[in-house]
Length: 180
Image 1 (cartoon, rainbow, N blue to C red):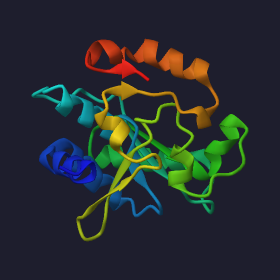
Image 2 (cartoon, helix red, strand yellow; image 1 turned 60 degrees about the horizontal axis):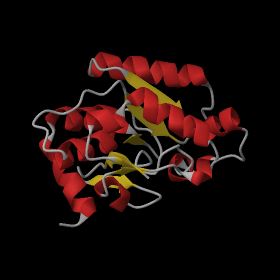
Image 3 (tube, rainbow, N blue to C red; image 1 turned 135 degrees about the vertical axis):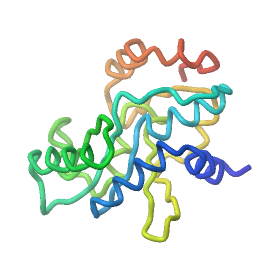
C-alpha cells in the first residue's frame, strides 16, 4: 500500500488522534499540522504490531502566522485546546521559531519542520474542512517505514540528535529501529 494512504488509514482508525485533529482544526489556524510523535509514533507502533498506541508526551501543534507572532497567543491556543480535549498540548507558531536556532525566517510550516532533528519526526497531519487528511512531509514518508531514526543534516545539530535518541529511548521502545 502507498505509505501516504497507509498513514491516513491508520490515523482514521485511531479515535484519539482523530479527536486531536478535530480539536486543532477548530482553532482555524493558517498552515497548521499536528507533528512530531503524533505521526511518527503511530507508524512505528503499527510497524511493531503494538495493539495500543504509545502515549504521547504532548501533541505538537505547529502553525505559521507572521501576523500573530507572540508566544502568549500560542499559550492561549493551548488553553483553548485543553478545554476542548484534556491532553497535553504544545502550540508553536513557526513564524518565530527560527529565532531559537539563529536561522533565516521560515517560509511556512513545511519549511520549518524540514529543520527538525530527525527525518522521521518531520511529518505532520492536518484535517481539512472536507474531513480529508493531508500529510506534510518535506522528506517524504519512506523513512518512517524503513525502521530507522535518521539524523537530519539540515538541522545542523548532531549532538541534539544523539541526545534525543538516548533520552527518548526510541531504540529500546521500538526494537526494530536502527539509528540511521
